[in-house]
Length: 469
Ligand SMILES: Nc1ncnc2c1ncn2[C@@H]1O[C@H](COP(=O)(O)OP(=O)(O)OP(=O)(O)O)[C@@H](O)[C@H]1O
Ligand SMILES: [Mg+2]
Image (cartoon, rainbow, N blue to C red; front, top):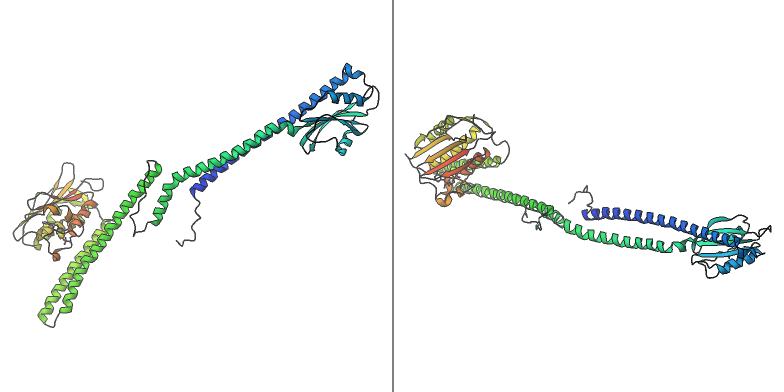
């Protein structure tokens, strides 16, 4: 297709998964973010608690009997360091006379006692103070407690370090797992969605490709209907539509083929006669008569074809008031000169209906001309009308001819269908098709009633548009 304005096709599948993925990812990120925040706050609080706990322990020790005997603060601190073992997430060290003095046993997560800047900063503290500092082992909550014995100037300090990231490690690990598992679930959800949408959308995709491939030359394709859900229903509706389209195209093509074929015959006849025409005036007059006859036939056929073509379109009928008696009388009056038959107007209904009078006359004249064609001089042809109890009208044409062969009874109403007894020159087989279109245009139909002879009946139902007055 050369339509440059066509928008790029975004597959519905990609869009659905995109949305799902986006929403899930957002929800998961929010969850992870909140969890992380809560865990971090809790870790901070835990580090703080630990620090307070250690500070209180030290204060209690400093005020105890055991500490009273120390005269030098470094001795008191050494004692405390010996008797107090730090957890894995903490470390203590002491600062005496501005320098790092001793540290607690064990290996701390990171050495801060060797950080000269840090030590120098804490070495001036005269009041207990707290703070946060970054270390190779993550954030550290520290507290410095100056130690004073008697009235001596403050020379020694205890530093307590709480490695917050070490305290928080188990819960942070859990949060990390949350992220990993969340990502796996997200991937699985996307994969599952891909499969499910694939299954759900497959019929729609097939519908699209089928619709794209359909051209008037190939209307035979259909969609495989699986299951009984909405999509299957859509496919079924689509297939039904294709059936109707195919029927319409086929009948139209047949119609055009038949029309072409039927028109070709008189053309060939005319041509043959003109080519063989000699100079003999009698011969010429004969040829002229024959050619005019064939042209008249062609003309009639083209008129009939136009009526049939029009019959499918709106505006085929021009409704008005039609008196049934007048209609029948008029048809018989028109028919009488056609042939020498025993013409009869049967019982007629003195009723007026809403219908297209000209089209009804046309239908009855087709029936009458058939009747003439199948009867002989003096045979009876009868036209009549009647109003049924429900208000529907019945129009009929009966003749005393041979009637229609049982095998032809249905077929003769089709376009270009002629009885087997017919000679080619007698008609194209469009008459009854026209009668049927006119009847159906009025919401009714035409049927062949049981004999003797041929009795064609046109039924016109009462409806809002075509009603009795
Ligand atoms: N009154 C009748 N008696 C016997 N057979 C009939 C009668 N009317 C129609 N038929 C049969 O029905 C066939 C179809 O009729 P229809 O009017 O459609 O075509 P046609 O008369 O052959 O051609 P056209 O009407 O186009 O000139 C006829 O060929 C004929 O065999
Ligand atoms: Mg006819």
